[in-house]
Length: 353
Image (cartoon, rainbow, N blue to C red; front, side, top):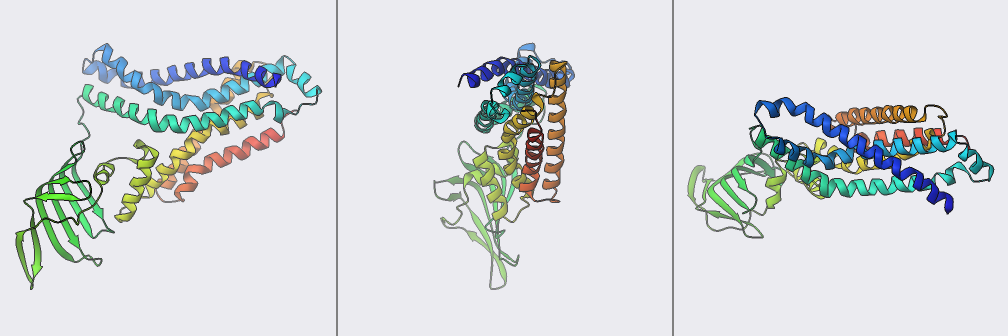
């Protein structure tokens, strides 16, 4: 439809300018927040720019919803100020139908945000954090001193260091206990290698009760230790720093081991709820777009920032409550989205048409 193409043509340039402005602003905030540290350690300018470059995808992820909100509100407000919306309404086209292309853009942006965060933002943010730690001479994150529970807590692994690339456990101790928590045996091995199906222990020694006496003897080759290698890797990670699939597996690992998993589950649900912000803000922006006839640029910018701040603060509070166990994780992740959808639909119902 001609009007659909016209609306999109009006919207896209404003969105590009807005997203560029907000990305630049977020990058500058991150840069100046750490600038004194870079100067303290005499970090070269080129390396500082590398850190900022790796932060660009995360900035884009944060800036997209705000930019969509601003661009849609400004576009519709500008059309209303030039009386173009009045002409469209006079021709019998409802406001909901006219603004449908913007809703489609918001929906597509939500889908894009999910895959963009999963495949681009998480790896580049990790690269940014790793590089920052090196430049600022901070202690690097390694997979050492790992302790995990498996099989509902019947097995406890203590590992000095896990080499993920080679899939080797160094300095491994395995404690086996009954479901009631009674000690059964303890296995020690300097090294364990993943065969593809189980962990092969080298020079393993087992301590176990025999006729009421704790005895020790070499452990023969066994294939009973089948915990997946990524279990040791994920156990040291935050669910928010993992792709959605790995975050789901982490929740499963923690739950099967009998460890606290509420925080990880909340982060897992948040991975799906956060990208939907693009669609939510589109509903808000459409409902606010025709309300400003004067100072459209300023009012659209202020309303966009105000709505974004309220949304992110509400999201932060609900996620904090979910992670602490005060509310269910799924409610903590989706409650702000639901509230803003209801608000947007209410405002849209009262919008001029």
